[in-house]
Amino acid sequence: MPSVWRQWPLLLSLALLAWALFAQPSLSGIAGGVALFLLGMRSLEQGLRQLAGGTLQRVLQRSTDRRWKALAFGALTTALSQSSSLISVITIAFLSAGLIPLVAGIGVVFGANLGTTSGAWLVAAFGLKVDIAAWALPLITFGVLFQFLRDHRLQGSGQVLLGIGLVFLGIDYMKTGFEAYQAIVDLSRYAMDGLAGLLVYTLIGLAATVLMQSSHATLILTITALAAGQLSYDNALAVSIGANIGTTVTALISSIGSQIEGRRLAVAHLIFNAVTASVALIAMPLFLWAVDALSTLMGIRPDSHTMKLALFHTLFNLAGLVLMVPMITPLAAWLERWLKAAPPKVDQPRFINDQLLESPAPALAAARLELLRLFDHVLALVARVLGFEPAELRRLKDPELLFREAPQGHAVDVDAVYLEKIKPLHGLTLSFLSRLPATGFRAEQLSRLRRASRTLIEAAKAAKHLQKNLLRYPRDGNEALSETYLALRARLGWLVHHLLDREHEIDELDLETWLAQLELTAKDAAAEADQALDELIRRRLIASEQATSMMNDNAYGQHLETNLLETARLLMPELADQAEETLTPSG
Image (tube, rainbow, N blue to C red; front, side, top):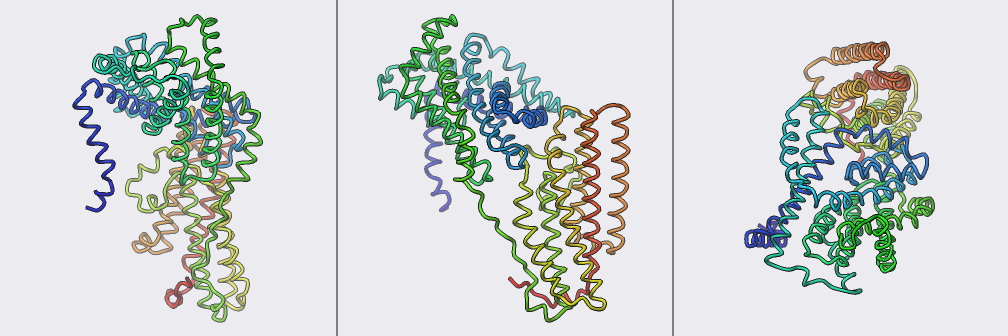
């Protein structure tokens, strides 16, 4: 009951909204249109992510060596996808993996701001003049049908068609709703002139964008209200400025809890939009003159306020680019100084301590347990590099999950994990082992433990080498290459699953049989992968550059498997269980 009372503001808001929608059917049409539009944008984004995620990633990596390329990539891909959030997610993933610098990421985000203006042009030029509702239902029908097909590209196409259909239907509902609402309430009577109107409607645009989590939705709502005569031209311009500011608020909220790269990019976005909005508000008379002058040159009628709104939205974002592009490099340097990565939370030993040095047998058992902890850290790192959650991979119930694409933006900062979880524990354990006497049979045990520590580090390095292409190629436009990388990911995921679940599996099989089965399966899978690659090269299904990458990654995969299995063999049989049972974690 107390938790219900804490949610009373939300419950009250929902109750008031329900009352308003039932009391005013025309308002219900507007709200339903906004809901359909937002749902359509989400479906469109998911479809593009499934359909073109790999292509976008590949182009992004090749388009960020020059500032103008990063700006062009952000503008063009956002205009084509109508989803700045999709571009931001991919950019943050590449930043987190260290595949592009912060300067390039900022360039992409700045360009995306200009790309978002294309949505206003499309709706103003076509959405209000063409009967898009006639297209909506056929698009939705085919979009849903494509969802039932097995080909993932057709499924992605279905998501895109469904999204476009819902967007069209949403715009039509908003347009019809405002026309009907005009007969009941004339919102234009609440128009405000001068500075007060500029500030008030800027705040309205900001609030609407934060509430709907979409500047696209705010702009489309503004354009349809303007077309229906429910909003004055000057006030609509102010709303568009507020919508730009509102996107930064949502970006900052979504960056909370994200990695440092995401927070830096969100602050850069905030600074860009704050500067852009300030310039638009201060120089409003100049922008109005420029819009009128350009409208005359472009043949836009003086009373075509929706087209002039789209032009204004483009102009002030373009002005922001002109002002901020020269500042990208110093801005990136300032952000890296101001928003520093938190110092690594160094993992401390749990089993080894100086008191054990006086008792070699328990000390060796403790070192083995510490290395098993390190083994689990490395396995967790490999799982995340592959795009799996370690806990989910450990209890894997459906093997088909191994063959599904990794979620978009699953990049893990391998260096950070290495510095926090692996390197400190590895160094302290090696230091502990170096202080133990290497005499008699214990010399062999010490040697095995040191070798296990080395193979663990080699496994972590192999995982880092694999990450770059595992992010890039599984979504590549070349289906043969994508399937090959998905098979590599599944093969490595299968091994990591069994190693994570070792305690349960060793209960059912003796240790030697279990290890022998894993080694044989890994060896056979590696041989099959080499044969499959030879076949792709022979049939010329992949380019020479891709073949080289695949050969290297197959080698890294085999190196990873070999080191993980050797670690398991070195650590599992060591020492008697009785020695381990005498130990308790040192805290």
